[in-house]
Image (cartoon, rainbow, N blue to C red; front, side):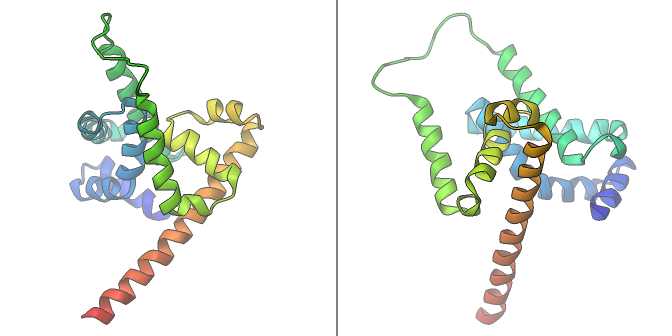
Length: 185
């Protein structure tokens, strides 16, 4: 968090390198949220770029005392995506909504593959569900806690514990890759 404080301070002072580092750190998670909501890769990529442009433009509005940087950035991404969807909501049905193919199955299968192959599948079930609701389904903590029927504090601890476990897993993989790269040189 101290590293984020310094980066955010630099970002608020219009340091482009800080924006780049924050992009590297948070873009994958934000992209997952955007993609899950809009279900279109090209649009999700554009919305991610718009999100980071807004982060750049509104960096001065971020207040560390009101919440984490990720939560602030998440809200920007989610709101941009929902506004985009609302703006482009068609009144006339132009898609084939055939009974033979459910398009949500494709998205659900992709998420299942990510879960099976990734570190998320190693988490306890309630941690997996919490991560899925917030990061893949784009729900707020309040909405997700209602879905799981647990108190808000309990839900937030699920997210916090899951993120810590995922960070630990990614650090282990990163360390392994660094060793492997050194061995292969």
